[in-house]
Amino acid sequence: MRYFLGIDGGGSKTHALIADETGTAVGFAVGGPGSQEVVGYDGLQEVFRQVTTDALQMAGINVNQIAGAGFGLAGYDWPSQRPAHLEAIASLGLQAPLEVVNDATLGIVAGALEGWGISVVSGTGCNCRGWTRDRRREGRAVGGMSHWSDEYAGGWDIAARGMRAVSFEWTRRGPATALTPALLERTGARDLDDLVEGAYVGKYDLHSADARLVFDVAHQGDPAALEVVRWAGQALGDMACGVIRQLELETLAFDVVLIGSLHDGHPLMRQALEETIQRVAPQARLVRLSVPPVVGGVLLGMEMAGLDGYPLRETLVTTTEQILEH
Image (cartoon, rainbow, N blue to C red; front, side):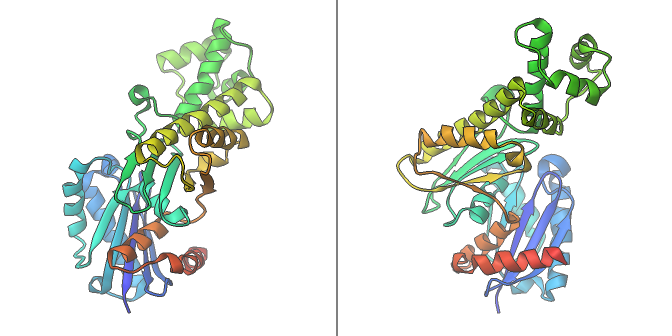
């Protein structure tokens, strides 16, 4: 029996999953952050060892029985970073072929029906990646560095755009908004003057979690909050359109995998995202990622070993969910 390892290393946690060649998940483990941007390469190496050891123990196998492995890593953004990531992975002692991709690309493997297409991430940050059908070409956004590459909208961006609406009320560049009393309550500011001044001088900090406040106010029908939500969807869609053009997918039917909790914040964001994308690629289909991205790591590992894992995908997803339930 052959076994396959997938690892999803994110900015807040790391998942490891092992499945056999029938697609049955047999081992799973959770560890701390697995991004070199957060913990450095030494920390990345340590957490990979921990989750791999724990997953192997649950599966009841040793590392030499792994036939293929796939890694999706936050913080793996440029080709120049590949050697350092491979060096950290080498400490696991894997003798199997493996592949390393950005975690947004891993979401395509996990969520797209045929394992190719586009991913759009909206969580604490944002990202967009794409893969052609033959996996020979990858398209990408710069990586969510919004202030100079004009890439939005993660949680902090949405919160900041909400604060922009509040400041527009203060300067009379825009109408009054229900975002103002919501942020007054959240920050404890005395009044609008205190809130705006405090935001500028650092007395009051915005957080990515404040995006939820924007969504809550939008659900109440506030026009300014709804405009922020619409802007977020259009901004994410614009990133996706750039990747679609890079890969020349405009006339094809493909999946756009939505990754990250903010896609569930308000239906208007998805509507604006879809409308923006379909003006460029009318046959694009939006798909919400509903399985752990680490599933994509196992599928990638199977591919590296010469096994087509997609006929086994349903079994893999079902058995992974069973492990997570227990």
